Image 1 (cartoon, rainbow, N blue to C red):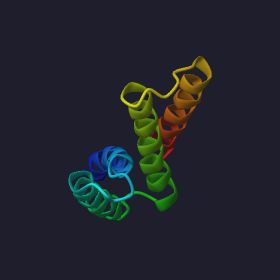
Image 2: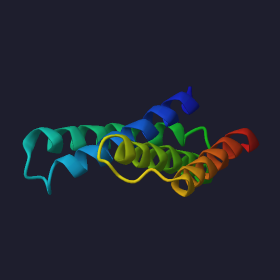
Image 3: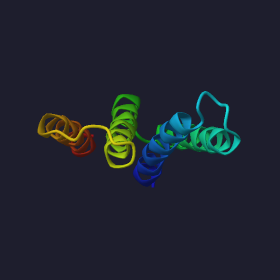
Length: 104
């Protein structure tokens, strides 16, 4: 259960990062609210998961999911460049996250 919560919390990290970008410095209400709710739920989920998962592993997995998700969002929605080097770096992050899960 802790791993499921951790993965959902990592996805919520992507949501709050995207909402933060859309909030335009908290000047837009709806994205600012999405940011706050997603941030709170993401942190609560991380805290819950860390009761069973070691902090080094859990935090790295959480950040990795958020970083990869946010980068993919940027490429898919915001028109950020999609290059083979960027994709290779994202694959490296995913590989590290998967490795941490299985070496836990």
